[in-house]
Image 1 (cartoon, rainbow, N blue to C red):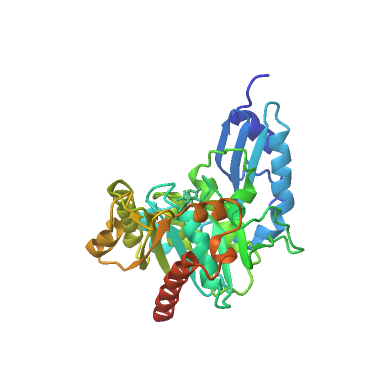
Image 2 (cartoon, rainbow, N blue to C red; image 1 turned 90 degrees about the vertical axis):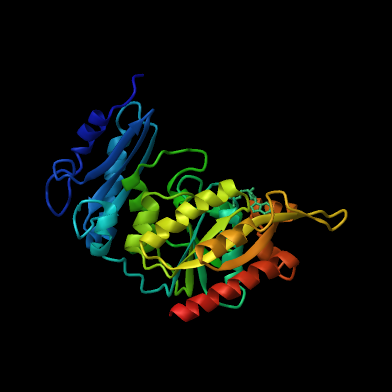
Length: 356
Ligand code: ADP
């Protein structure tokens, strides 16, 4: 069978009519970021934010229309809220004119970022979120790492989220904290290449169209690096603070620095740096082995004039518990590791209180 083309998908989408405007969604220019690659189709439909909840049927219709094209195997179709400022010269210079999303239930939002992948950003985000919840505060975690969503697995959440009567999505609960993930929008085994507009549209939906409870803090696990998602977050979401996670070696710190500078440019408050995998504590002789060098992130924090929030050792138990959905702060709340995460959580609460 020959491969589906973008033209065929657009042709099929012409059968979908915007119920309010009576014209098809292609002619109305509502299709954005269409990507057709080896049977995988992704696009977003730009709609007025106020109409979002009513347009789920139209989204489903568009999804079915795309699937009807011979050769199409997977589809990812999302609704994107129109940006009220309209297209501007460049995302950076547009920043000031973006309307921030209204998040009435959420008191503060913290972004957990890293320069590189694999430094333990998600593990740190989950354990920090649990540590922040341990004093009885209400905490949610939003997995915005579209390229490697892992938070639901780390929280032991296996079910899929359900839509509520209003059409909004109900967050899931893992170890007592609310959780929502980009990963729910794509199958775990289906690596989808998300283009900028797709990913940023999905991120906005995860903030605005999820029935978050009354949260003291929403922890956002960002994708590694700097990109569209980071820009969207800083433009559209009121961020109380950014935390950078890095391992101690220069190669990771150099990328962490880039991330830090990006958030600085968009005036997001930097809460500080957490050093992960600081050292290996040998269980045989209790000696510390500084596998990636010593104090790299601490020195970097000093050089950048930001706080050093704490260090987390490299430990098999942290990996095993995190990868099996039993994060160490939840399952060994009185252990040494949990204490470290909680000490960092206390510092973060202090910073939130100071900024409030
Ligand atoms: P990232 O989000 O930066 O890509 P992850 O949190 O997914 O990184 O971690 C990558 C791997 O490293 C996972 O298998 C995780 O369990 C492991 N890991 C993270 N932090 C630690 C740590 N402090 N000690 C041991 N293993 C860790």
